[in-house]
Image (cartoon, rainbow, N blue to C red; front, top):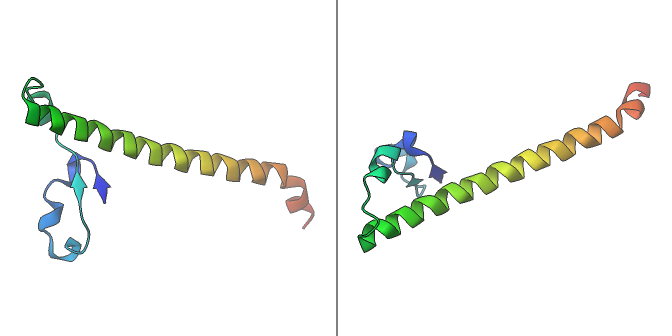
Length: 82
């Protein structure tokens, strides 16, 4: 499960132990990363990829919704007659 930084500490709850959580860093903690340090640079790349992945999921959901609404708009006359 991918989540933003608001879900910090969720993995400690008993009912969520069956799920593998990937929680984003808090923005302030990410700003403090020293990008010249190799490990911090890797953490920064991981955070960027998580954000990209969430963005792709949001875009897919929005496109699916728009196509569904488009289909309803196209079929509105047939729906009125029924």
